[in-house]
Structure formats: structure tokens, C-alpha cells
Length: 121
Image (spheres, rainbow, N blue to C red):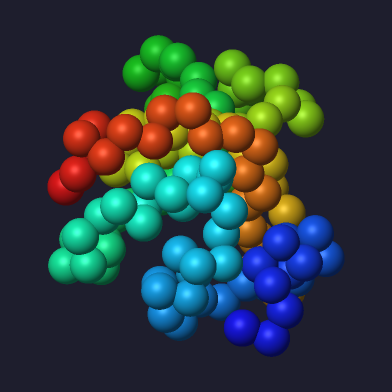
């Protein structure tokens, strides 16, 4: 890697990891990546679905039928509140949305539920 991982994170730059061995060596042992370092090599490439949940709304079928192109539905989350990170539907932490180049990204605030038993496909 050209710069160390902490410098890339602090500088807000995009991080592209081609080799997980380099990633394991670059990430401090106190982070959530320390758990990933204990995964057997064959398990590291198992795909999971990561989603960022903005919020939800409970509505009636009648309200659903009335939704149109200009409809606005209030969600149960407050504006500016951290969003929920989910892996395979299981909540693992909170994040905020950031712009990473021309795409949206997420900036992790905390990871408190990274339990591999819950997120395995």
C-alpha cells in the first residue's frame, strides 16, 4: 500500500484493498478487522449483503395504494441520525452517508453487533 491505512482513513481517501493479507497487517488489532483476521482464508471470500437502512414507515394498504410520484412518506428515523448498518439483514452497527468519488459510501460510526454466526449466509 502506498500510504498506511490510518492515513488513508484520516485523509478521507478511497480505500481499495486487493489483498486481504495486506489489509490484516495494516489494520490495528483493536479494530473490528481483528475478528476478520481470525477467519479461515476460504471463508474470507464468502459474499454477504451489506445494507444501510435509512428508516421505515408502517402504512395501511389504502395509503400504499394512494402513493404516487410526488408522495412523501415520513420515516421513523430523525434527519441527521446515524443509519443502521446491516449484513444479511442482521444489524451490526451505525454509519453516516458520505460521498466517495462519484458514488455514495458509508462512514462507520460504530460496530457493536458484528457476530459472524448471525450473518452467515
